[in-house]
Length: 287
Image (cartoon, rainbow, N blue to C red):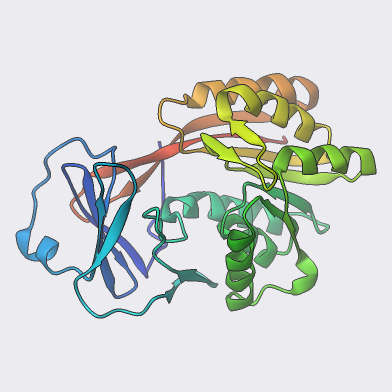
């Protein structure tokens, strides 16, 4: 398991208990549901009762936030030299996945070790955590997401983090259609990052299912790599094995380019010493 290092000052996973997690986002204490928490923790009632914000799931689906204290609609947190805008969404997300800091550290080092500016493609790029980390380290990043609102959020994160505009390109599009157009244009990249959802729809109603589409997408993406540095796949799909993602990268990247393929789970350490499972990753790197 790849555990996110203690590089966060403005985020902290405080406790885990029966389907919920207690977190600190800056100065805001939040309770959110998490289906991975299937155990009883050593619940500190004082801590769990002293929260600002709690998300309640509805029996009919979805859910809503309960504001227990007066807090702003959005606020900022920092990770190393980056700044991110945090905003509670209707679907319980906060606009950032803190466990990805483990990948941001690796991205930063990989990019800074390059002798020339690498061209990175970030697909299903959400609010741009990896985009901002890679661009701040010196890469030129093409950020692609089907949701215009997520791209606007990512632009704000880049602005807050002081990323030069010339290091970024933001695209609102269906990922597969964009990749196919890049092939026709003969555009190439040095590294690819993707965080595909379990299920989704593109701007024109295109349907995405990870089990049906991932291999074809990675195959198409592999054709965009000129002098490849890396290929990183993240996934939060329940039941999707990291070994499956490993096999895809081994088949499409290692057999052609050599290098090394690694895989595993992502996790967050909590203040209560329990580890929260946070999805999987598979990664190909050049020698």
